[in-house]
Image (cartoon, rainbow, N blue to C red; front, side, top):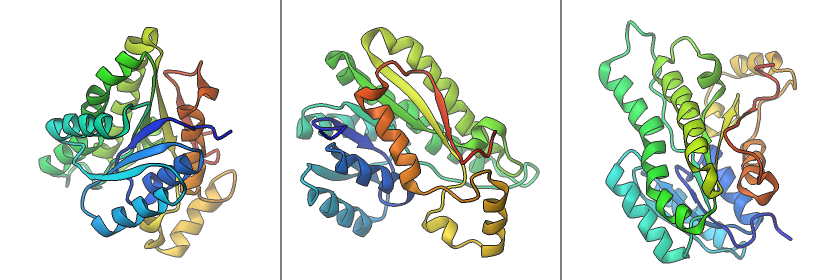
Amino acid sequence: MKLLEGKTAIITGASRGIGRGIAEVFAKQGANVAFTYSSSVDAANALEKELNALGVKAKGYKSNAASFTESQELADAVVKEFGSIDVLVNNAGITKDNLLMRITEDDFDKVIEVNLKSVFNMTKAVQRTMLKQRKGSIINMSSVVGVKGNAGQTNYAASKAGIIGFSKSVALELGSRNIRSNVIAPGFIETEMTAKLDENTVQGWRDSIPLKRGGSPDDVANVCVFLASDMSAYVTGQTINVDGGMLT
């Protein structure tokens, strides 16, 4: 028996990196997957094809999670196409790193809008369906930076810390309807983006982690499977660090 058999999941920002890893692992565990992407059409089409080949129903949607209206439209389209929304993974996010003295107002606003407001937009968009079903699992992607802060990332840290407070509040509000809300805080996860970084720098990061390696998208995806499945039926309002012991 696959852990997510018969469940429909929305995953935002899934055309690459961690989001793509989550979509692949969810499909392998039997979930039908509706995923969003912002601009990479080719990557989205390839992912859609790959997921459908695993025997589940999968569809990519070009949708901007930072837009309240587009989020509402997406949720409506997914219910119409798939019949339910059992799991929401808010994964879409950007960085615009800079020291506080150099950061512009626009760089601050943009990161808050894409990383934090998108979580509000999408949670609000799926809420009605989940309330009607009297069940649902919401999984929000924060970061170790949201837990401990990081120099040069005031905007990103604020957005990721905000996700934690938001998620705990949702857990308290919707718990009586059997809707769960949890957070994953990934540490250093190796993706296409980190592959472009200087190898010595990356090795230095690996050496400073107790497990002596960077994480993979699958490491995050496997914890998402647990939180999306009925195995975590009594887990809500939690932040799980997936960081190889970085914050220990």
